[in-house]
Amino acid sequence: MKILAARLSLIACGVAALAVLPVAAAATSPAPTQVAPTQVAQGPLHIKVCGVAPPGFARCHAVLVLGLDRAQTVATRPDNNGRKPSPTIVPSSTPTDTATNTPVPPTDTATDTPTEVLTTTPTIVPSSTPTGTPTSTPTHVPTTTPTIVASSTPTAVSTTTPTPIAPRGYGPSDLQSAYKLPSSTAGSGQTVAIVDAYDDPTAESDLSVYRSRYGLPACTTANGCFHKVDQNGGTSYPTANGGWAQEVSLDLDMVSAICPTCHILLVEASSSSFTALGTAVNTAARLGATAISNSYGGSEYSGEASAEKTYYNHPGIAITASSGDSGYGVEFPAASQYVTAVGGTSLTRASTTRGWTETTWSGAGSGCSAYIAKPSGQADGCAKRTVADVSAIADPNTGVAVYDSYAYQGVSGWLVFGGTSVASPIIASVYALAGNQGSVTYGSYPYSHMSSLFDVVSGSNGSCGGSYLCTARAGYDGPTGLGTPNGIAGF
Image (cartoon, rainbow, N blue to C red; front, side, top):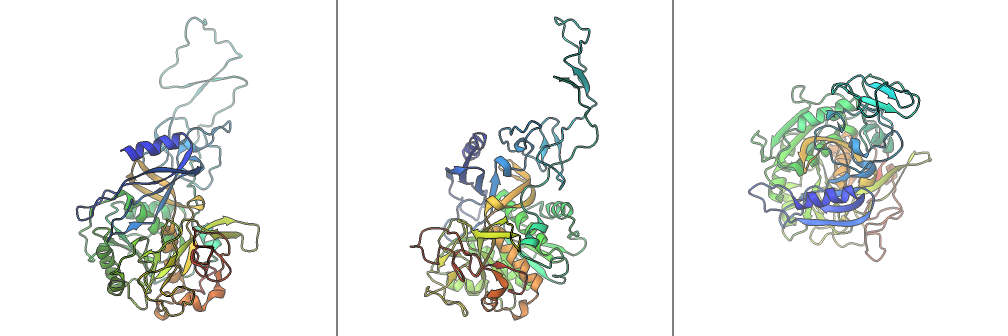
């Protein structure tokens, strides 16, 4: 496709761009609008994987990172002389060694210098030692045995199994450390539901790869931890969709990272319409979810005040919704008074007591809703509902590791993601760790527990005259809400 060709060309040139990729939508959903890549800065490519949503439909808020240091491919690793080849997308379910075309599984112990992969025993011929073969007659080299010509004293080459490449991006221990979470001891008996559109055929197997890689307990259909249903609670799964499949993998992995003892319920809507997604939310509530994450959104519309009552009004269940990935502005269902609207931050390590620092992610959504009444507990300058309530990591430049094998646009395997699609399942899982859902009234709980949050006081997500609606400050602000989790007491 033209957009993929443009993206590959940009990657090859080391140019960063923001591209909105088309989604292969089901027959019931209008085809998303294609948007050509736009150069934004030098660095990795940030790709919005779910396209553009027409009125009445939502798109996921997952942002994929490709190219340069963040791409999970052999071609982006420095070679043994410190040179970095041109980035290349490897279209396989796992990272692949480009010399042998064999899979290279991930590991934590990988270094910036990859181990050379050889499939046969090498013959080392130093150039300083004559071989006895006339220079006019080429030396015969068997096709099954590669010959390495050394320019100096030969170096022994190990024939042991090479050290594989580690996933890029933050993993479970990083996130648990950053937010001071009791993930190893809390969450038992809780069920976090993930609501997304379309089918991810490899959801369970990909989840197993992620959890195995990080030493998390297995979560499968067989052991009762994982349950996948369609929007009505059955097994008539919708049409598969690569972009939304990446969103599914992202959501499942984030729940696993934050609450590894939680059960996971995946509810797949038949399309990305608000009606289908809302029906899936109701199904998740009916099937016993204690927290429900919604990593999607679309433009506000006049009927959303009615829709929020139909689909998102579930007292005693913590429902989260991502605020967006296009900067200042409000989307639905994050605008609903019945959800916890989740903004986004940039998370980096720091030499502080906490060990981490956060600033506003420029892509997080925020602002005043045009239609939704102001919920109790929220008091600021907006006459109606203000987005967001709380926040978590979302910046693709400080992204998280995700495993997805259902190839989309030639991309699969270990990937790095950002977007408030990361933040929403994180916050839903923190609610599950806290176990307070029975006493939670929609998104109001953090407002009475602000001291149990990390306040984010710097950064902006757009232009709004410098007000708190788009600029972080001490206390409440639009892009990051009340702040990020500092343990579970704020939830």
